[in-house]
Amino acid sequence: MTKVALVLLLIELVNFCSSDPIEIKPQHTIDFNHFWTYNEIVEYLEYLDTNFHDYGHIERYGTTIEGRELVAFCIESDHHHRHSKPTIFIEAGVRPREWIGTMTALYFLHEFVEHHYEFDDILDAVDIVIIPVANPDGYVFTHTTNRLWNKNRRAVGQNCFGVDINANFHYQFVSTNDPCSENYSGDGYFSERESYQLSNFLSSPKYLGRVAMYISLQAFGEQILLPYNYFNIGGGNTAALTAVANRAIAAIRSRNPARNYQVGIGAALRGTQTGTSTDYVRGRVGIEYVFTYMLPRGSGATGYEVTEAEMFAILSETFLGLHEMAAHVAGV
Image 1 (cartoon, rainbow, N blue to C red):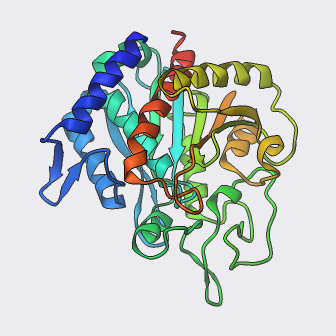
Image 2 (cartoon, rainbow, N blue to C red):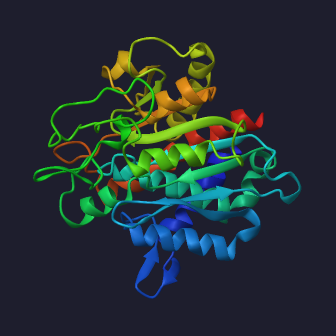
């Protein structure tokens, strides 16, 4: 067992067994044994901003049609080199029913901030931006009304709501005809606040030219997808991406040998998808290392419903893979 894996195993035992988990507010207790609400997520980011401000801060990069904040947490541990190090973006929750992606992003955030001293070799070399819930209105709707909702909540026609944010980015965008479809892409690229404001945040002066890696956490399928999704063609660096993905998979399998992740071009493994965030950041922004994690399926009928009993094992093993990807950017 590697040093990182051993440390993480000890941390997991504390997280899982502790009778005194982190309390953010009297009505909310933070642990990784339940799926967090949007309010819990924002409160946790605010908690980190207050209590670990030397290691990062919350950023609010926009609002949704229903008035919820679009939030990120920026892990920046070196005051002397802030805004100069290469940056990793981790995005989750663009499709709101994929709760396991949001929780995976939060677990990674928790480990790298609250246990930052274990990852100094990486944090000395890179900054990390984590967007745990890129589609807050849809995410809240999955908690209150429809667990399998796939879109945001903007009214788009008579008795129809929502656009699939992961089909609304400005690269190989294709408009679809049925606004009531769960895959409705909108009447134009960047028609939605969630996609447009994420693009602006990514391309803001603070990050322009600094983003070395972009990871989208989604569900499900045990796959690491490489550009492109719109057509079965590589992004020009498929061999390099495959090597990094295989490094991540080896780390995951060191924890769970039963995992059988595939690596390949997105369109080849899952069929054509247009207007995706990862195609946009590779094809238009020009970020070199771009990956989509399709996390393991849950035991629910559709596969999206990961149970709370299943959740922690997925978080901890996926963390090892993400750690290896971050280590690649850091050169360690």
